[in-house]
Image (cartoon, rainbow, N blue to C red; front, side, top):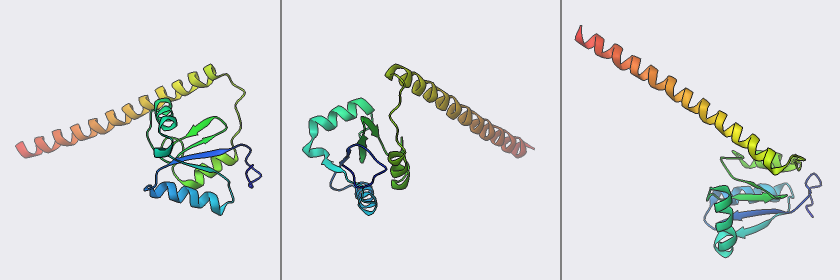
Length: 138
C-alpha cells in the first residue's frame, strides 16, 4: 500500500541503472512518500520485452499503475506531471474497444494537425525561396 493516500494500487517503475531521468523520477517519488517497486529492465528481460511489444516504446522510466503504462514523452513530460497523473488516475468504466477507438481517433487527429503544420511551414519556406530567387534575378 502506498503511504500517499491519494493513490490506490501498486506502482512499478521499469528503469535501467544508468538512466538519470529514472533516478529523478524515483527521487521525486521518495520526496512525496510514494511507494514503488523498481524493476531494472535487465533483471526482467522477458517482462520488459513484453512491455516494449505492447507499448511500441523501449523507453525508461516506464511506469505501470493499475494496469496502465505511462511512458515519458508520450504520457508525461516531467516527474511532476507523472505524479499528478497517478494521483488523479481513475479506472475507466469504458470498454477496451471504446478506449482503443477513442485513442485511434485522437492519434489520427494529432497526425492530421502535425501534417497540416508541416505543410504550412513548407509553403512559407517555398514562398521565401521564390521571393529570394525573384529578388536575385532583378
